[in-house]
Image (cartoon, rainbow, N blue to C red; front, side, top):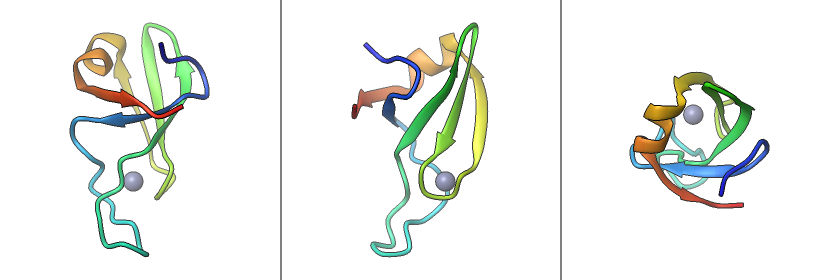
Length: 64
Ligand SMILES: [Zn+2]
C-alpha cells in the first residue's frame, strides 16, 4: 500500500528526461494524500494534483 512519502511509478512516465540516461522520468513522491493526491516528480521537481480515483487508475507500482 502507498502512503505519504512513498515513491511510485505511473503507467505513463513524466514528459521530462533524466539527464544521465536520456530516458523519461518515472519516479514520483506522494506529497499529499487525501481526496486529491499531490505527486512530485523526482527528476524535474514538477508537482501535479489528481484525484485519488485517477491516481489508482494510473498507478503502475510502488517503489518504496
Ligand atoms: Zn518530471
